[in-house]
Image 1 (cartoon, one colour):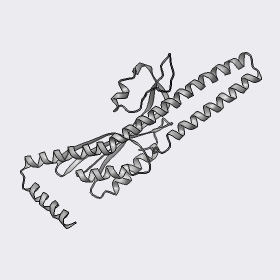
Image 2 (cartoon, one colour; image 1 turned 60 degrees about the vertical axis):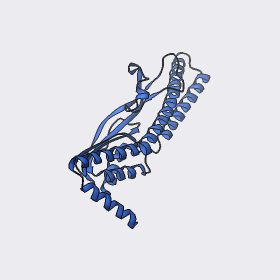
Image 3 (cartoon, one colour; image 1 turned 45 degrees about the vertical axis):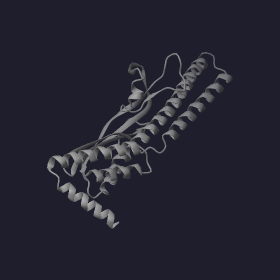
Length: 245
C-alpha cells in the first residue's frame, strides 16, 4: 500500500512539474482512456443486452398483432353469424392475447420505472461527496417503433429502440414504422467533478439492481481537474405519460 501511495505521489509531482499545455494533453489522454475503458466494460455489454431485449419485444409484439387481427376477424364473423364455435374461438384468442401481454410485461421486468429513475440517479450522486449536482430534467417520452413488413410478419422484426444504434435504424424504412405501445422515457443529468470520481459514479450506477439504457456520456474539461459531465439514460414503459422529474 505504501509503495502504491509513493508512486501516486511521484506521479502527482511529475504532473505538477509539467507546463499547462502538457497538463492539458495528459488530462485529455486520461479522459479518452477512461471513456474507452467505460465503453468496453459497461456500454458495449449494455448495448448488446438492449438489442436482445428489442428482438424479444419485436417477436412478442408481432404475435400480439397477429392474434389481434384474428380476434377482429372472429368478432366480425360473430356479428354476422354468431354460433357457439366462433364464441369459443374468440375466447381462446382473447386468452392468447392476454398471455402475450403478460409475456411482454415479463420481458420488461427488471427495468427501472420512469418515476424512480430521476430519484435513483440523484441518490447515487449524493453519495459521491466530490461530485456536484447541477441539474436534471426529463426528456420527452417517445414510442418504441417497429417495422412490420406487409407481406411477411415473422419473428425477426427489428426494433428502433435506441437512435444511437445505427445498425438498427439504417435497416428500417421510417415511413413503415408502427407504434407497439411501448415508450422510451429519458433523463438528462448534469454534474461536475473529476475523471476518476465520475468513473466511480458510473460504476455505482452499473451495480444497481435496476436496469436502464445508456444513451450518451458527455465529458467536458473546463478547469482541471474539475469537468462538466452530462449523462443521458432511458428506460421503457407501457405508459406514455411522464411522472418523473
